[in-house]
Amino acid sequence: MDEKIYCAFCGRVIKNEYCFCPFCGVQSKDFPGMLTGSERALVGIRDGSFRSTIHRLEEMETTLTDMEHELDHFISSKKA
View (cartoon, rainbow, N blue to C red):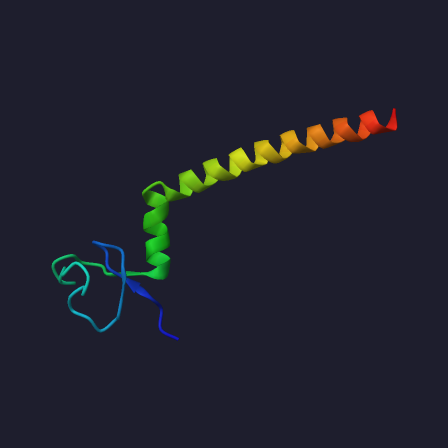
């Protein structure tokens, strides 16, 4: 299976053999480094999507902790 290649300019998936991105028209030699899937992940980390994901996970953790405390309080109030 071929690894997906992404245009480094517009980010769309393109075929490995293309010399130009069919979506934005950028020539691969003009914008070096049409990106593979793993390279695109690294660019995403550098560009902040990783930090954004971590922030969302931290918010979810806080929400789950709050829900756990509410559930514990509810259960303890039913026992009394």
